[in-house]
Amino acid sequence: MGLFDFARNIGKKIGLTDNEPDPKDAKAVLLANQRRSIALTGEIKGLGLDIKSLKVAFGAGKAVIEGLAGSPQVVHKAVVALGNIEGVNQVHSRLTVPPLHPTTTGGAPVAVEPPPPILYTVKSGDSLSLISKALYGPIHLYPAIFEANQPMIKDIDEIFPGQVLTIPEDPTPLVHTVKSGETLGKISRYHYGDAKLYTSIFEANTDTLSNPNAIDVGQKLTIPLLRKPVANA
Image (cartoon, rainbow, N blue to C red; front, side, top):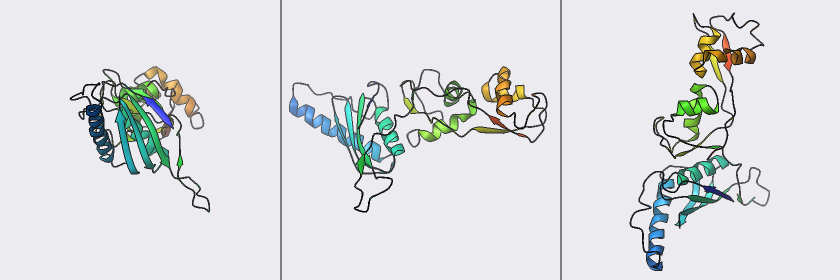
């Protein structure tokens, strides 16, 4: 089972924090939580994730999600999507996934605790390209972050401070095709924002480069990661 913490007062507004009932009125609290549970279930269903028998229960800021997920990746997406809704400060996953190798007796679904996703909390002034630079080095790996957070994010500019994003640990490395007039310094500035980091590109391509000042038009160069992402959510 997975339990994840999020910021309660930040996220998509779907009315969870509207019309708070008197905490002493047990019936009103129960009815409010039922309404909120229905709203959260509808929100996750609306994402079109591969989850059968989906159910989300809510109370005291905690969302509990149940159902049969198609993969651990779907589990991650559902958990992060719930955590990015205003009013949810904790998500408890009871999602299950089918076993990879069903047994001859049918192999009943099993509860899984997927490896903790690498999470990043968006700060003021962030963009996906700046996050990519901070976590990977190359600015242009932002599509990997965008893809990992779909369908929750529908536009690369659709992020906000406090939002939690899933960060792919091992994105596909970039390959740069050398153009006329380019140097390793110019290529480094384009991908890293700093020409002085050209040595990283040279070292990653010593199988085809013997001199950092000698590159050919049309040559394909691997643009390496400079750092690994760190979970900070």
